[in-house]
Each structure stands twice: as structure tokens, then as C-alpha cells.
Amino acid sequence: MNAHPPTEAQDRPARLTVGVVGAGRVGPALAASLRLAGHRPVAVSGVSDASVRRAAELLPDVPLVTPAEVLARAELVLLTVPDDALAGLVSGLAETGAVRPGQLLVHTSGRFGTAVLDPATRAGALPLALHPAMTFTGTSVDVQRLAGCSFGVTAPEELRMAAEALVIEMGGEPEWIAEADRPLYHAALAIGANHLVTLVAQSLELLRDVGVQAPDRMLGPLLGAALDNALRSGDAALTGPVARGDAGTVAAHVAELRRHAPQNVAGYLAMARATADRALARGLLKPELAEDLLGVLAGAAPDSSPATGPKGPGPNSPGQDGPGPNEPGQEGHGPEGDER
Image (cartoon, rainbow, N blue to C red):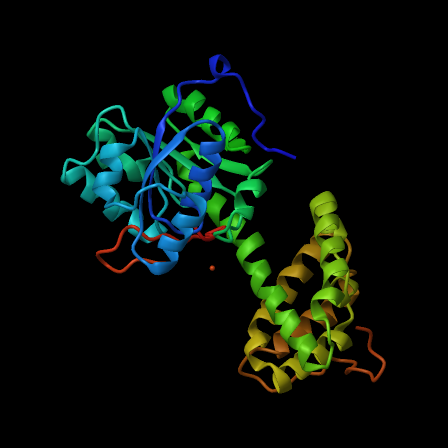
């Protein structure tokens, strides 16, 4: 299904020349998506070999130039660099006179709103913060994945229609985020996406360690169902030994992790405590069982000896490219970013 259905020229808003500063995973994909909507990518900057390859794949025939030259050529500029590099990049471009009045300047950081663009805004730029809530691979598949993707959008009131139009043209859905709420918004996405990757990777490793030949095939249906249930039902979807109050099983988990994967113990305990709190508040975990469970978790602190809990585990217990200091053209975030 084409995420960018063709429209007649007279039905389209004015087409823009597009530039990308930072040919990481996000910028070239967004520019390629805008090209499908009729806009014209004209320049891209990038430093690393990976950036050059991405630009060549997603934006063929678009010249690779310096960041200042990108701004000189484009009416709409995508600043897709790492969060920590963004403020310095914007200040540098403004101080050198690279920013032109009336130029649309768009960054894709989840952390920042439009205030980070203030130096460019004072030079006459039109600031937009458009953060796609998606992880990126840096390949052409990302362009199709933008269909239905939510964007966290922050913009001045007079630019809201322009921001909304750009997001919709890329196949996305705008969600308006207040300037002050951007860090919390981004933290929410990092908890859900970035931490999920870490948890899944840990699970895959442990399954391989016990001899499972296709851990991805084993986890796929389980994780797919868990994600679907969680999105539909929230805390009501909690299952497993913590939500049930099976203190002995949790103690067995901790003991085995200490022996075979001690690097995972702290994460397991933190997630188990958070799960117990939510299950208890939701009424899923019975208070009389919670006491034993929380006792196990408290006694299994990372610097203590393995705990077995009040009942002890029984034999049948069920079971985010980055720039150097002078290389602002690289990017990586991740949902970020998340990768950018």
C-alpha cells in the first residue's frame, strides 16, 4: 500500500527544496518520504562512510555538501543530528550567517522543542520540532514504515498548519507536545522502545544459553501477544510470577541469573519491583502474597548472596552514527532514539 497517494499538482501546497544536515538513519528517510510527496531534496551533509552510503541509497543524485551549503540550497532543512550536538550546530549555523530569513528549520529530536532553535529563529528561520516515534534502520524500509507513524510535534501557533502538513505528507500522524513536556515525552518513548530492545536481547541470550535453537521463533508469538495485550489493556495484561506473587519462582530466577548472567540481575530486580508495584496497585497481586515477594526482592539486592525467599524455589516452579566535536553532520537517536 502506497503511503503517499498521488495528488494533482493544483491540490498540493507549494513544493519545497529540501536539505538534510546529518545523514544518519532518520534524515535521509524523511527526505525520501518528502520526495514522494513532491518536494525536491537538493543537498545532504554527512561525514562517516555509513552516512555517505545511506545518502547514496535513499537520496541518489543528491549532492553531498557541507552543512552551510545545505542551508544555502534548501528552503526546508532537516537537522537530524544527535540530541547533544543539536544546540551547538544551531548556534554555529546562526553565528556564521548560514540561516536565511523565511527558511523552515526542522529538527527531529524527541528531547527538544523549538527553543533549541532560538538562535536560528532570531536570524529569521521558521522553527519546527517533528519527532517520528519510530526506530529507524537506515534503509529504504523506513520510508514505508512512516505510514501511520505518530510524530511528536512542537511548533509556534502560526506554524502549526505547516507542521501538520509536513507530517501528513510523510504519511504520519501529528501529536502535539508542549515545549515543557518534550523531555518527559521522550523519556516515555525511551522506556517503551529502547528498554524493550535491551530486555528482548537479554532474553534471546539466555534462551541460547539453555540450548534453544530458535529463540527468536520462541519469543515472537509470546512477545507479540504481550505487546498487543499491553497496548489494549495496560496493567490488566500483567501475567507471570511477579503478578501472581510466586515468591519462590522469582527467587529461583534471581539465583540462576546470579550464577549464569550476573550482569542481568540488577535489571531483573528493578523490573520485578516495578511490576510488583503496578500489579499491587491494580489489584492483581494479593497483598498477602506481595509481602513474601517483596521480601525476596529486598533480600536479593545486587551485593547480597542469592536469596531463596520464605518458601524457597521448588524443583517444579513454573516458569541505540555520532559526530566528533567538529562533525555536526552525523546523527543518531533513538526512540532516541532512538537513532536519528
